[in-house]
Length: 115
Length: 110
Picture 1 (spheres, helix red, strand yellow):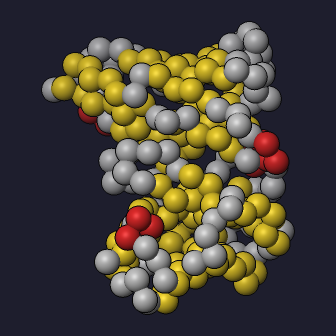
Picture 2 (picture 1 turned 60 degrees about the horizontal axis):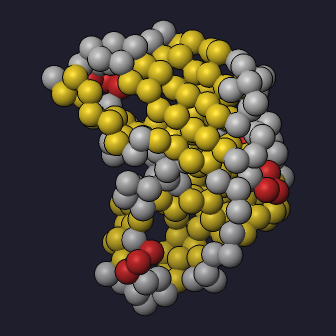
């Protein structure tokens, strides 16, 4: 199984809502990532988890809160988002940390709209 | 910060024509990766280049890594409609991060 799954596919939320994005992989990968991608732009790294510990936080606002419950799951908790946070949120995994040394497998993404 | 520059930003080609996208870095790269993202899709890994001067082929796609390991190219021969999408190069940044180029969007004219 070389698939990364993400739920939901689409999410519309108000600025006062709390929601969570979920990501799952069963490839035994030990590094997992959250990216944000705006239209016609490259993916922007948000967070990296290495062996289930947060290793990189790219100065992401605290209204985004990542969580890695186990080696297969990655969540992104959302609270009090702003309209400019509307984007495609991509989860990815790689065999091990050491980012660029390993190919990244991306999930299909969650398209988030903040109203 | 470290950047990977990618050109062109857009490319329109007639079906059957060739296409090339280029990536450049001001610093030596330990490796470079290439990804393709179809419209409405997610990035999909194509290849990784590690060695100076390396050339790898995947059917109609040819990937090159420069001798100085500061530049790379992706060349598609005889484009087909299935080649439509955005092609990203990605290089290593600080602290084991991946830095994506801005991508080249390929449009195929039938």
